[in-house]
Image (cartoon, rainbow, N blue to C red; front, side):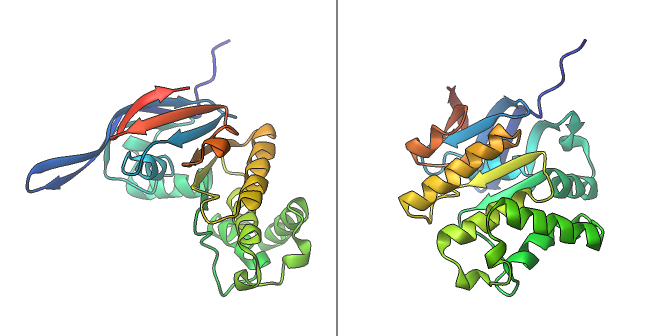
Length: 228
């Protein structure tokens, strides 16, 4: 019986920008494998390429070279429209700034990624109700983001990211705007989700939050310098 491929395989991925002096590299020769169910923390100083790597994994950045396989699909070889469709189906994002839609209620924010995926309305309503219950935010469903604390907004952000059962959850400094206790709640939530089988890749500067992951990939000047 053959072993299943990793969820993510990067081979010699590079990202650079052309300027008058030549090329400025943001990522250099990144090769990485992430099995399904893994929880990886990406760390490194500012300018190391962490967010750029996350953007490539999330199929938001298309100006890179190399090979990227997502569950065996060659992202690097897909037409732009197919890449975009794959990203919407396969990836959920959690951002430092929450990125909730201010003019939509909590329930309506949760519905947005489902509408992108053209999930039938009756099914969307059931999924939203289940997710509100799962995250303990049923009582907040008719509130707007401005009526929530930062921790509550990030809870809604995580719920929105996973409501459509993405293959991959990406988190860019998800606790960066939270107090320590709120940050710990979010990390405990990530740990529970990972224990349930969700594959997570997070970027953080916080060593304590990094320890919630199963392994740490450290970047410096665009290079992977260690995997722990």
